[in-house]
Image (cartoon, rainbow, N blue to C red; front, side, top):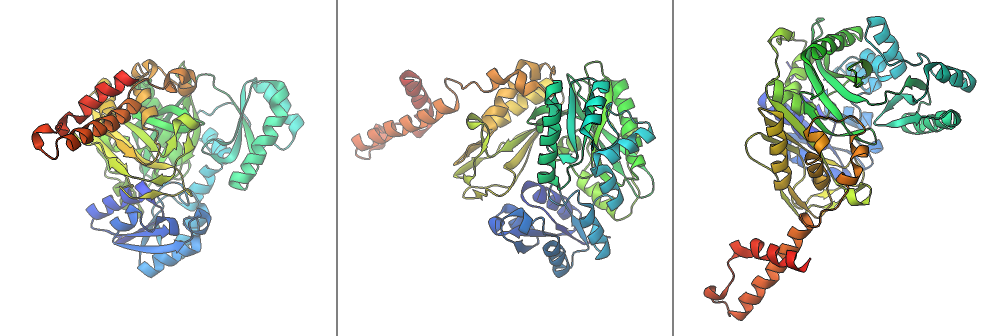
Length: 502
């Protein structure tokens, strides 16, 4: 039985893991960098250990410091969260060597599925459909041109060790082949230390659909249905939902069975995700496997009713899966919006700074996984994700309406956030109708990036003008209550005045 878990991560995912640990009566240990001394995950944990300077290379990616903290704390397990060391096979090996349980898959599964070329070969052998392309790294540019002519343009040049959109190039013209291969290699070596790239046929209208899987150490594996992840910007997911509006019951069953087959082919145990690309004709192909917990896992938890972190811990303890495929079902609809500290009006530039005010959305069917608070300074060193907003309802239209309400209620000042941009997505016809693919943001850019004549700007001006009016009335009344504009009228009065001035 695991008694104490060190979470080798930060921010919202660290807190999310700690919550499940607390429910299981397992002690939690936080680690933190210099920039995260005042972070909420440090406050929430039972214990916390400093692991280095602010840059992640010197702290959250410092294996020696993390292992040292785990030993000092007497932790018998480490949960890596997502990102950082979560898909690092050498880190998983080191945990095993030190007698610390790694709450995740085996080093073999991480390495075999982390390399996309190796993963493609394994999936082909297992009978899982893969996108037409090369099964070996591109080493000869002349042969690459020949292979692309055989596959047919357009194609994607992809880094074998890639992820997060890095080391990827779309090639539509023959004249761009060599420059795309070279730039993909250059970016791949910088990002991953590996310049191996391969070629895949580009699906013109791709839908990005992933299946959540769970597998134990006894050969049992199940899937917990799909997540629709096609709302993306620069190959990064922005909004996810489940069930997918594209899916049919027959397709769900077929893809789910292939997801389980993929997990078994990788000799996988733990929680993982099989990602597929689906075209408009509902042909689907294996894309990659994420050998960790996904950012968007809460929507699966809400619709299926399973705590995935608890299942990870039980599997790591060597227990058999108690969940049966035939007993699982999807109930209702869930949507997740990723809230980033970035400015949509300035090409989504990161917006670090001090949170001056925050009002988190509440109410029926709303879940908020975050880590910031008033007075907290968002550091510049890490991913700008500050929270995940999840809603659930019985139907998809109701879930969209609930997300609109939750985004309206979510107020953060002191920094710029992606909240207004996400709210616009909820108003977009293609999203409302469920008629979208990975080109959604590009196809709806004019609408999504259009600034509203009123709205947040109008509300800000309203509050300012209302305050000045209130102050003027207060000064003129010499402190008498009957001469003062009631505070409950501020917003209404200010909005009218602001609209008139605009």
